[in-house]
Image (tube, one colour):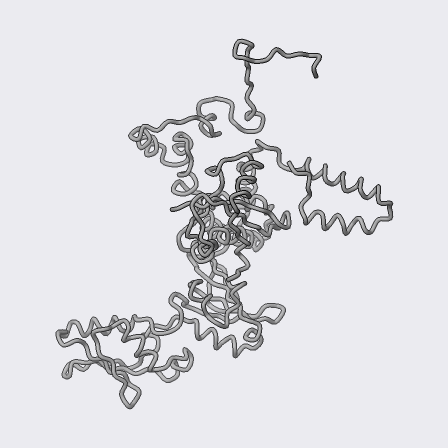
Length: 73
Length: 384
């Protein structure tokens, strides 16, 4: 299901995750969080600690990438 | 830091650059200039963006009307606007004071008023009490009879059979029978006494028989471009999105929590921005969207919607002193004492309280001195 309020979510592969962590120079716990049972990623079988890449449509920059780490409630 | 400019600026730059008559090398120079200028205009790290956002939303907020209600359209439907609505959104109240949905329909249904009214009738929450007529309690035979009002049956598009089906689901121990006159006869369980039968009557009238639970009012409306849509009082996003005639892409609710639950945290974030911006625009107030983006990002960092209150965002703070400085200080201090909490004084508020440099702007970088004794290399002036 697509909805105008929901941007594209994608779970990063392990290599991509490591690269992001290296590029941003942060640890997993420093990311904003997304719940494992969040409606937008529920069907993608997320695991705790996965990083989700969100392609937001931004009014200021056109498209912005945002990252959230999957947490269990 | 990447030396890229966002796609929106790039697009505008390309449009402008086409219009001027210069050679490619000059164009390249212009692009470079725009890039460096963009880098220069970005917020420097350490800037106290939160304070700026608070002031930028707070100041125009003083100019907002304090009117709670405003008539939307011709009907008797109310929506909360103005400052009360802003407070409601930012405090992340569990339910808005006037929950409402904007329901768009698929193209083929959105053209004529008749089609829209049909869908609207399908959505409306109908209790048995709204359609039932002349309910009589027959104490002699110990049963209830009622009929459905002919006119109301048409307006709400209710069928007797459907009503009985719904009632049977709720009242499993009662017997329902449709008589030839389209009346419905209810036989309560054998052990029921007179008191029970009157209780049953009240319960029956309060039973939901048709439509979508929570949609209390529907109002077909028309946009300027001639498209019909439906405004409702009451929300039930999940159930409405399941209906076939609905445009599931644009249909939305004004209940942030509901959006968070049905569509996810990112949708809730966009909804916060969208809703606050809408209220501000209605009042003719111009707040830079970046401030609202910051606020909504803060409200959703934790994966669920948290308000800017002592139970929400402030409760997430690590520092005891920072939490205590917001509201009800004694409660926080006592609790922290019991739990033996340690304050590492890393935030701004704590450091203001103890009269130390705050980690903001130039307060962030620290001077580190390493003497030769600690293993620092002797600086060789000639090497650089």
